[in-house]
Image (cartoon, rainbow, N blue to C red; front, top):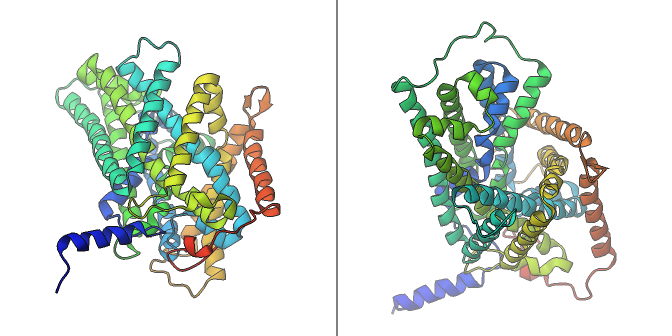
Length: 487
């Protein structure tokens, strides 16, 4: 006799609730929406102007965006091998641990929690707050507290959605990404209207249109291009939760990069044809100028909503992937074992998600209290990010040498050429970010010390948890890796 349907459903729910590690619940649509949502942020509304001014001509400008997509695709192919070979919710943390040991991965986990993820969420929340305050001003709250209120609310609401479970978070992400992409396509349609109506500036060939820009100028243009493409590597954090073949995460990465590149080229075309190359290069508010030309004064309100939506989309995606690093760290270090609690029914690391949300809210409060100094502090930690990104790229070589016999469902083509190109690009970005930070100051101190300080605090924490471990070690069985590996 078969069990009644209600009993079967209850049994499935009970089994899910007892799951202590990530389960395969995400499809291709959710993965692509998450990757696109992380990558496409407020940068596409500002960076094309700077790229145009540095590239010097439309040809080199479009070439920079194509090259950025190509570099990102090469990086995605490298990450595709890493994620299919050792899928894990820890993403980069897991690659660094296998390649270099627990100490390096601990420092990465600390930097990601303290600044890279929580700082990004707080900054994106302020972007959302600033633009929502322009669209719907909170007139009763003066100064910075109007935008800060919007920032607080965005983090609180999205945290509540993601704490309901992975399905709730990814469903929200899919809708937000669809709205964001629709907004970008609307800008392209607006430009098409300007062109067909004869009101767009006439595009004239410049005498020096084909002249190559200086290497330093084009290199700086590529810095802004690659920053605008940044974030696709976050797909590594959902590699253990993808349904079907392990190669699906590779397909999601490649498909996402192709879609993002196509969108960026279309939006850049819209700016160029709607404003003209000179107008584009000199504009301080590209999207606002374009939409105002198409829709009049209402365009300014519209762009505020679009930028706010882009920020909201990135916040939600960053929340989903960010908490998984803390989960992996808690799984490996008994002192932080509570972060490794995985709610099987909801498919999310609940304690890690809560801690991340509280930390981001505290950073928003700090940002409102200190003003611009907070955003500068987070921006000046870019070398820390590029350092670990470079180490993740190099880990592909290390793991091929140290673990030659593990299954690799996807191997990066043209090895070792493509991984070398990816690592060289990451090293260049590390050097560029170091050069920029070294030339800046914050509170009278050289900004380079901020990244050093973040890592120094991480080293201190590492020494504390190593020298003074908790008295009762957490049972390894509670936090087994899906592959059966224990910390």
